[in-house]
Length: 208
Image (tube, rainbow, N blue to C red; front, side, top):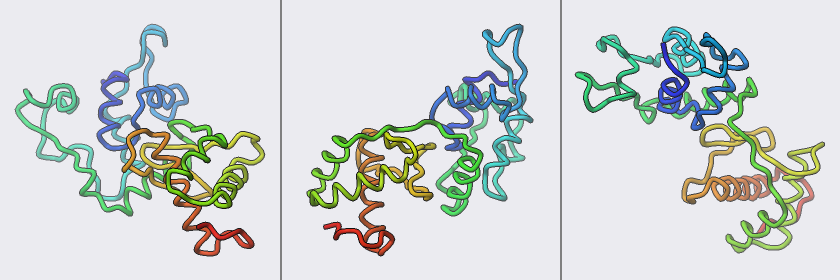
């Protein structure tokens, strides 16, 4: 049986979440089947079968949680990898990109977001200025943010692991920046710029 902490370590290794609170939310909502201890305040226990089933439903075909050659307590691999007599390395880079994207859409399709990021006009202005784009383009980005969040008056994007949802599309973070705020904003700006160039926004001003 896994604790929330142990389940989080496994899920984060598989790029399904980067926040422990997300695991707790999934457990509370019943998305991950778990058994409460004497009281919910004392936590939950998640069976290996329940966690494996949760992951398998979200991973590409052919993926395995634990190779057949591995025996013993699987959670020990996460808790103490340096001392156990075997080592499991779940190599996400080896999974085809298409599989990762499909996995992201499956989780997002269930509206299981890790969080949301609020956007204001000043953020957009500074991010656009960083790339030295025009004031007209700044206005275009802001209009797209407002439209993307309608009917909300304050723009926001929903994110999961390393990508966010914008205009119905999965947009990966720009990992050339250190802070998540910058990774989202800069990726959003480039998404709008490329969409405008492709003609997606009819009658919009030139972006550069």
